[in-house]
Amino acid sequence: MKLNGKARLPQNKIINDINTDYVISGRYKFKIQDPNELAKHVMEDLDPEFYSRLQKGDFLVAGRNFGCGSSREQAPMAIKYANISAVLAKSFARIFYRNCFNLGLPAIEVDTDQINEGDELEVDLDNGVIRNKTKNTELKIAPLPKTMQILLADGGLVEHFKKYGGFKV
Image 1 (tube, one colour):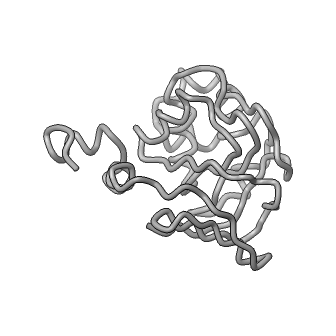
Image 2 (cartoon, rainbow, N blue to C red):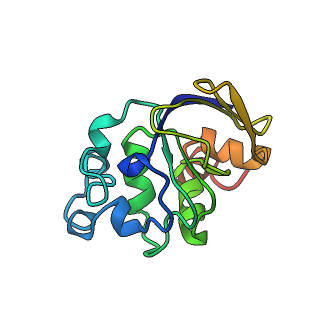
């Protein structure tokens, strides 16, 4: 599985400890039920222009402890419905990481220090490589296990269960 897009950094820099309330503000979390509408407010409190810079397939790039805070699924859902193909961060809050895969959103741990706003990236989940086409460099990542790739291809755990009537890989 290969993903291609541009790196999108909130405030155009690597930020640590981005909590789920920064991903999607509480003022929207419970008022907006339509995930496509919710997506229009992704990262708004941290970077009001973030959503307007996104193109389908882009990557949200951050530092350590991404997704700390609330365990609700609205944060990874807002990211996914903003057409972001994956989140690249140095580390993730545990529940957020799991929620990403439950919803079919890849969460990739990688040293993001050498990734800049707008860099063209190719994420190769099979071979464990992120190619920065802008800088002509490569970053190694742990290849995703086939089971996780199947869940992602099916759109997440819930969609996988609907498709097969249970967990089947």
